[in-house]
Amino acid sequence: MENINISIFFNNLRGLSVYKYLVKKKEYNIDIYLSKKNLNKSLLLKLKDYKLVDKLDNKFIKNIKKKKYFLHIAAGWPLKFPSELIKSSTKGTINLHAGKLPEYRGGSPLNWQIIEGKKKIFISIIKMTKDYDKGSIYSQKFFKLKSSENIKDLHKKVNNAYPLMTQSVIKDIIKNIKPIKQSKKNARYMKQRSDADGQINWETMSANNVFNLVRALDKPYQGAFYINKKKKIRIFKCRKVKFNQNLKSGEVLYRNRKKVIKCKTDAVEILKEKKTNYK
Image (cartoon, rainbow, N blue to C red; front, top):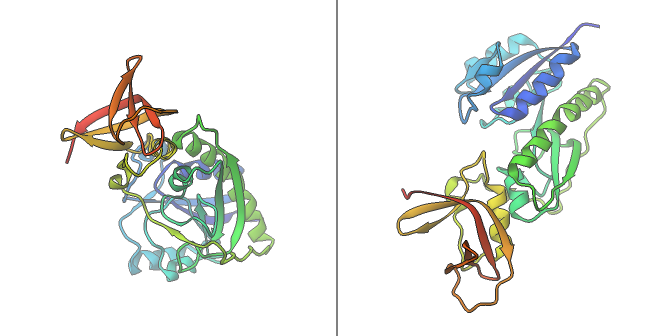
C-alpha cells in the first residue's frame, strides 16, 4: 500500500508532537505548514522541512489542491480555514480542539476549563466545517487535573495524548467510520483570551477564583495580574487560605513574612510574583 499524503498545520508544540509521532509510523508522507501568526519560534530549530504561511489566500489554496492530500490536520492553528481549503483534500480537515464540545467551542479552551474550576479537562478531535467548532466529533478524551497542577502541566498531558488520538482517528477515517454529530445542548462559544483578561478583581473574585486564574495563566502565558501604584504585578503561584479578619477586598497583610491578599471571600497567599511597569 502506498503511503498516505497528509498535511499538518500548526504553530506550537502540540502540532510538533503529532508530527513527530506520525512520521515515525512511516505510513504517511507529511507536509508541514507553520503559521507566522503567534508562531513558537523554537519550532524552526526542531524542523528541517516546512512552509511558513502568512495567509490562506486563493494562491495558497490553489497550490494545496495540486498536492492532492488525503487529509489536512489543524493542530493549533490561529487562522480561519476557508471552506475551499477545508474541502481541498480527499477526506477534508480534522481539527485538534483542546476542549469539551459543545460546551467549550471557541478560543482558549484549556485556560477556560481551569478558570472555571473543572477537575476533568477534555480535548477533542473533530471534523472541521465552515462554522467554528461545530463539526462532528471523531474522538474525545479527558484528564484529571489536580489542584497542584497548572496550565503548563496540562499542556504536557495534552501534547502527549494527541498523537495517539490523531493516529486512531486517521485509521477510522481510512475505514470510513463516521464521526458523531455534536449535541446542541449546553453549546456556547468562549472568548479567545487576551492578556487584559488576566486582571484580578479582588472585589468580585473569591480566593478559589483567583487561585484558578493564576493556575490557568502561568507560563507559557504572561500570568494573572493586579495593579498597585502604577505597577502591574503578575502572580505565578499562590495558595488559598481561610480568612476571618475584617479587611476590605484587595487589602494586603503579611503573615509569617508571606503576603496575603483579601478576596471577596477568603484570601490568597502569594508564593511567587513579579512586578512590571504598567502600560
